[in-house]
Image 1 (cartoon, rainbow over the protein chains, first blue to last red):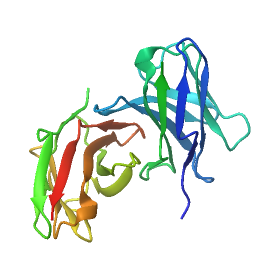
Image 2 (image 1 turned 45 degrees about the horizontal axis):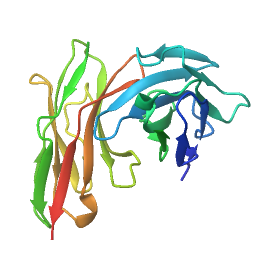
Image 3 (image 1 turned 120 degrees about the horizontal axis):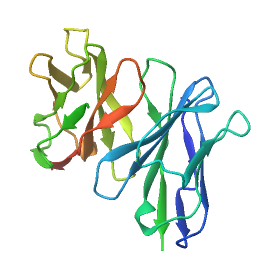
Image 4 (image 1 turned 120 degrees about the vertical axis):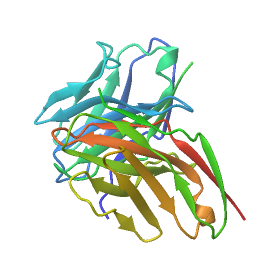
Length: 112
Length: 114
């Protein structure tokens, strides 16, 4: 069964450092998403990406965040200068239009 | 703005018994979808069941079924014959028909007692 793959599973970084979270969506899917879940809280939408551009983003997704699909398979989320409050579980998801979202297993980001 | 509310932070059920998790939502849209996702301790989000708003029939997937009350904007999940592996956080989620963005509730932590 096809699946969304995220790497790394856990990333520890110093405050102020840049991190890149990676995702390989399901190959024939067209829409890609990043969600965030701060420990013990609900899952929040960050950004959606379609046809090589951002289609929607939340107020959380400020200038410190960026996404790209550099090679047609990987989908990355970059945080330029991490803050303590960026510590969370980050989920990538992909969708074939109109169907349900398939989620990766998540990347736990810890900012120290 | 659309919102999703899960009023039960925690629930507990005996193995083999039935439990119902509640979810209400608020929307002015007529075209939308509702989902229940399961998040076990591994933290992965796993789709349990989906419901299209235009369908009157309640969705069913094996031991999982929903009670979709469109007028009341209620979307509860019933788990029959509960198993130890059902223990997880359960999230209700809403998606407007014209977008693929999911809006999640705060989750219900389900414990299954042997």
